[in-house]
Amino acid sequence: MKIGIFTFHHVDNFGALLQCLSLAQALQEMGHDVQVINHQSPTAGMLAGLRHDLGSWPHLFNRLRGLIHGNKLHASLDHFRHHSLRLTPLCETESQLAQLANSFDALVVGSDQVWHFSREPKYFFHWHPPFTNRRIAYAACCGSDIQPDTDKAFLSAHLKKFNFISVRNDFSAKMIQQISGTLPEVVCDPVLLVDPSSWVTPPPFRAGSYLLNYRVGSPIRGGEQTLMKHFQKEQGGLPWVWINAQSRRIPSPPPAEHKIWHASPQEWLGWIQNCSLLLTDSFHAILYALKFKKPFLGYFTEPFRSARLMDLSKRYGLKAHIVGSVAEALHASDLQPTEFSDQLIHSHVAQSRLFLHSATSFPLK
Image (tube, rainbow, N blue to C red):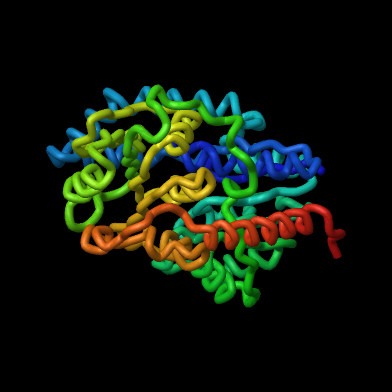
């Protein structure tokens, strides 16, 4: 079957790129011909964002760091995007998107936060002429349990056109049920479906000889530096490595002995695989720590990020690994992923593979 994936492949984010590659590989391993639909969102908001930054010295410094280091990170991620993903020709307009999409036997939207209600309708396959073949949502996520007002009748009409729907977490399932009237299946993120070993580039440090800090949002409540000192003392004085997550606005980095400003996705995986402990607020960094069986502490600061991480905590038995503040973190003891978590993940992966097989093989009514 010729399948097109419609997701956030165009953003500068390690997790977004790797979940896209993982879903493509999982479908290819099932025997399908897979491409990523190379359609990019408009960038009309970029000028407004620059004006906002010019009005604040801290934001301006973040933007300047982005100009110095972010362009190299973008180049690294863009190289991966064009050399590791099998992209279609670029389509920029709705008519180009519709013409390209209609050449596929099936479309898969997801994974990632494609179904936040502020997204464009195209992520619900709304374009003209409409797509008439198999419609699948795999691990689509609403991003947060906090959503803007939306046209529920519009969303309901488009959701009912899907042949198979799955989401990535319970809060997304609840929201989609409220709109469509049907409770979707909750499946695992695509990065758990495949073995990433062949993608890994080992770091220039010996395995287990450093602590890793990777942060995509705000620092943990209670003091990031306090927590870093705590873990450094517990780990016998191992140095901290910090990896930059931003290509446009780079906030001031934490006091790490080693700073990596523009890693590739392969290098990012290598840093996680070989660290002694990972400190992160990243959904996908946590999943890779679980895959590589690395000790980690995940945390959330922003409300929009908490729902996704709390769902991971509940689903995979990670209560001791995911916290909301330094005060909670200091009570954490053994941060090594447990056998119980591994069993829960293994079972969820098997269930998710079954959904993906059924969605791509069952005859349509």
